[in-house]
Image (cartoon, rainbow over all chains, first blue to last red; front, side):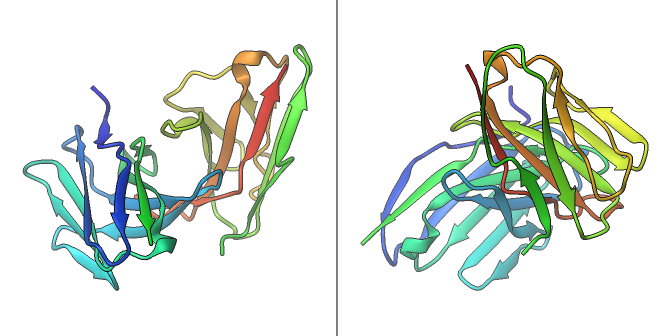
Length: 109
Length: 113
């Protein structure tokens, strides 16, 4: 079983749609959680950290459920520029991160 | 934008050649990392360093080696390249402590013929 599992998609949605991605992780000792975004043939970039209380950054909302070891990302009012691969990332210990394989989002006009 | 650089960006080389992938950061970060990523697949940590003269192997076994003689520089070397080494190699850095953001360089795409 992979340490971080994501639905690979692709999620094909129209502009303006709301889309939600889910992720599960296996290491109950993980303390830090992130969503990264990776554009085609580019490096990953931090989208947002995920906090226990849930957090929002503009159109993006992240939620963490430690009991279920589950992380989610909600994108509202999707834009064409949101098309990318979204990586769920969990720390292993210290600064070591484990990356999910990513969920592909395609926003179409 | 993160100040982390990788060269070359693309490299096509024959089997058996020695190669060094360069990674430099100007943020003064103590911690640096090398990841390997195949198309459509997840990143796998192959090496990391928590400071000068500190290097450790990551979760994915790799025939490459690294060195950390200066804080800002973390090169990766393959003594004898093989087609199985064809992949994208991504370098990253972070400040320290636990769980901070890792900033990635643009990557090196390696093709070994």
